[in-house]
Image 1: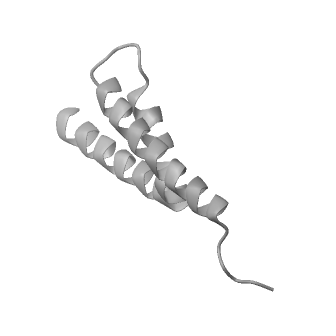
Image 2 (image 1 turned 135 degrees about the horizontal axis):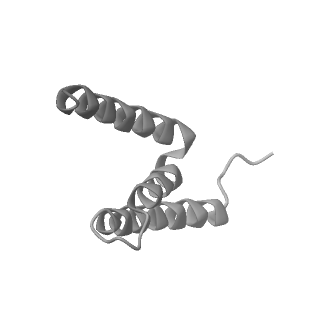
Length: 75
């Protein structure tokens, strides 16, 4: 059996990474525009680029930042 990657797989990987970057850029704009769901778009882009482990790590970081803000400013 041949272990070479098919060109199709390479194109799919490239397209996923490009779409991921585009989603992240649109998501950043969405943080400032009320009609876009910025965080959802950013997480979708991260998922396309890095998969589930990247999304899990990002959601943990976001949770930690949120908890820090709540502790600091809820007094």
